[in-house]
Image (cartoon, rainbow, N blue to C red; front, side, top):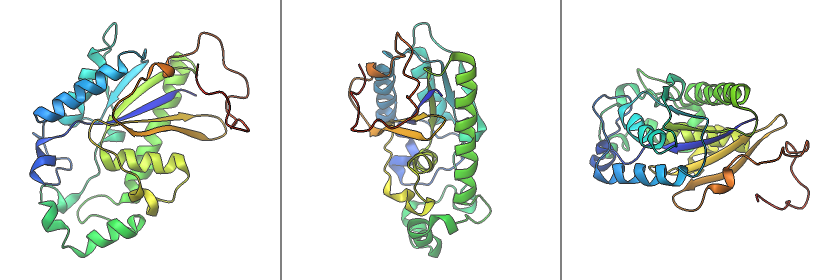
Length: 233
């Protein structure tokens, strides 16, 4: 199967103002966020990408466009609602410091599998549809570009954390142990036996090792190599 690079959007105006943006319109990258997105794009420019897919929200599209444009040649941007932000319902647009006083806040922190936002989505439903979307898109990329293809999904913090938790075999109640910063890069390789998490919340470093190999990988590539293996070339 293909390898997916999960990129969180760069820092937004809502992040700095302490507001839960959710699916609100008009939330754009701030100056720092734009710089972060450009840095992520520069890191990914050395990896030939098969596709760049984005949440429909503007802050993600801004980030994804920089990544797609940094490819040679530039790639078209694909939008998929399966990786859109959690629907926080009545919590949308409210200050974080105010929400932290709500009874539901403790549930979100301690037992997220039981958390459902009033007028919105449960975290369980959020994880189910985002994991299904990423796995579906990964299968589509594999079918079109081969099992050594690499593609990017630009999404949101809670979405990426929930996808990583699934890949790590963690219960949703443990997903708050995972941290995903703005414009950070996390990497999952899905196989016929299990997902392999190759990186989480990275901000810097060479990604050239993700380039598809010149020769076909071993038929055992879906297995975990006993002893750890030799690593990428």
